[in-house]
Image 1 (tube, rainbow, N blue to C red):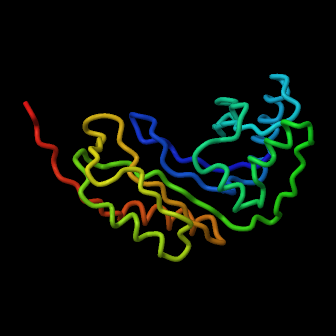
Image 2: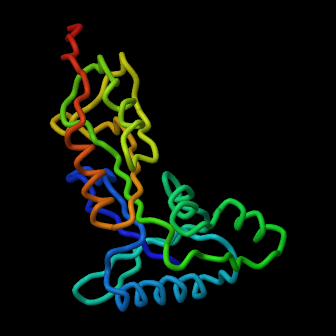
Length: 200
């Protein structure tokens, strides 16, 4: 099992923001998280497969949030492939036909990878997504995916759950550099928007 970091969600909507792999937690805490994750899977009767287990390290130690009997969604497959050289889809297929999941995991990791879902800061209609598309050409950017297009109406936190407007991933050789790079790119992203005219 490997441990990655997930940022606090965007309150009060619990909207996901950034993630980082490998984790920056001390190895002893990571070991506790791995131990609880494996024990929780065994307690549910699982013996083989690919799982997405969410835990939180609290002031009282590791605590289980949820178990998913599947590969994680979003950036999870790409993250594992780039950081550890392990394809979770292949491992899932192996498990389905009874081949034990014992992939060779790169040690040390091949890179440090950070990603971020950019949440809309205000509501409006998108007029220009050029800034997102330009990020692909920058050093260390793995990808910058627009999640909306020109003409779409987006929601900011003042009106409801914010719309994800982009998914950005960067890869570097240092964890803090990866995280700070993706956060800087996200915070400085200038998306063209205009007010939505009321029809009432």
